[in-house]
Amino acid sequence: MWTHILTVGLLFSVFLMAASKRLGALIRAFRFQSLMLALLTASFARHSDDLELWVITVMILFIKVWLIPRHLEKITAEMSSGENMGLVLNPPMSVIIVTVFGWLIYSFSDSVIGGMSGDARLNFSISFLTIFTGFFLMVFRLKALAQIIGLLVMENGVFMLASSISDGMPFIVEIAVFFDLFVLVVVAGIFVYRIKGLFTHIDVSRLTRLKG
Image (cartoon, rainbow, N blue to C red):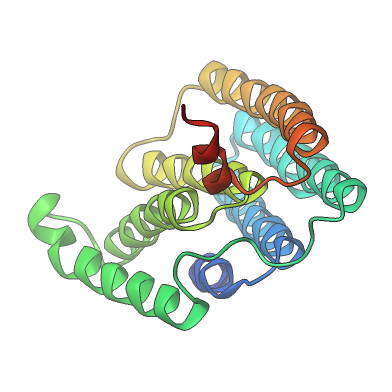
């Protein structure tokens, strides 16, 4: 029962992200999604009695629920960029697109990977929808920080997808991915801060004006 509730929470987080107008709301939605993912991993660890899953749960809580969102909030506050995200598509249209894509994924998931149980099919669909939502944020949100969050959301989806269609990623790969993600966010934060200092904004669409 708890697994189903957490899975629904992950699905809800996808729509929260699609509906977010401000960076602060998007960061909170990412934190909520990561929390649901950590609790779901803890549920799997409890049933399988797998120490590695417990370690991954702690790492998700520390890095994705606390450390990365805190770092992103600090960057947002320092740059006073917590207003809108430079929306290419408005939130209602974004939610509609994500909903339609989610329905398509669920409808065709059984033909893509046959023989899945109902729970596995749902997990696969939500995982793929999470990856799509991360990609959607990277394409249809113009602020650099929103695009960084989109990449982090895609990684959440990849982790969920690996767990839903196999026994998950190898433990050492997960450790490396978490470390790489944190380094990426730190470096990207410095890069975004430099963009803000040089151009007084972090709207990547305006960089096209640098063309000769």
